[in-house]
Length: 435
Ligand SMILES: *[C@@H]1O[C@H](CO)[C@@H](O)[C@H](O)[C@H]1NC(C)=O
Image 1 (cartoon, rainbow, N blue to C red):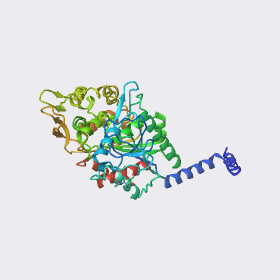
Image 2: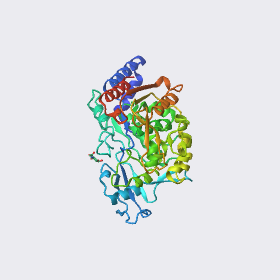
Image 3: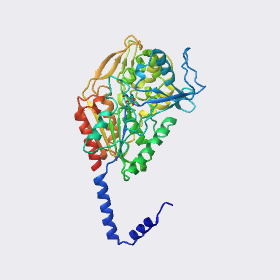
């Protein structure tokens, strides 16, 4: 036991004090804490932000003749902020080693045999960054700086943290197997418990942008109810790419992940076949609950609504490989509308033309479609964001603790860079510290 004699003595003195004095002492303590401290913030960035490292074992069989030899057993940067500058040969290796496989027996995705991966930088708000050199602003750098330079004075490693994840996998709903997310959720829970302890037991504010917003939401929904109450001060989702889905992922699945991953030396069709193996390629396809029967993809011979996604997967991919994981894992999530049951702020952009309907008139999915736009933040459709607020945010027990902020004319990525949006975000975090 670590109790020292002076410690034991002061505990004894406390026991002997009259109750009224004890209350005074408690009161002073809590006021001092309230004055000096902050609720720690954990940032979860968008899909294009985390890095990945890999190492190969002798079980790895490259699918291209040139091979992709690496010193066996050594970790190397697989997805980094320099992936965009790969030459064609290394880009081919990247595309090969990133692929996932779906294991129907486990009901779960996993890496290619012989490829081990890990996400570096976990815990740090500087542990991730944009992979697209023309868009250095994609990955919460501006929000991090705003939190550090604001009067709140957040500090990396003391009150400010980050939780990058493997962007190829999607978070499960409670009860679904996910080797990758079981581990990630455990690490994130441990991080939060740890930083909360180091900040006088103050629960954390968990903030996610885009796909990171979905990861944050699913983390909370997967945690035991009592744990959430103890450790989550507030959930903040900014333009979350949640399981209600949006139309753009249909285009990425059909024609390639333009805008999601940037590797110019890799042929678009190779990027597409890699992308189609990712769970994230399926997880954000438009859900029937949000998009109903309206036609989302139009070809001369038939239209596809959110109810026809399995058919579209087969038509676009020319194979049924994606259908099983889509039906087994992603469809059930689309109907999962449980509220997170913690204080929750939802921040979304509206009024920006957003892909809503894709016309592949001659059925050629190798070419970019003609796009019809509707309302949204330029990436995520307004219908999806409203459905999240109405079906999840306004549930009994949640709606009293749900706050929605809409920014007309602020696009998806600008919600974490635009000065006005940033000041509202910082303000929201400031308020969470005083509520
Ligand atoms: C790229 O990432 C490394 C390490 O993750 C970091 O030190 C470096 O500053 C980043 N470069 C850019 C241009 O973001």
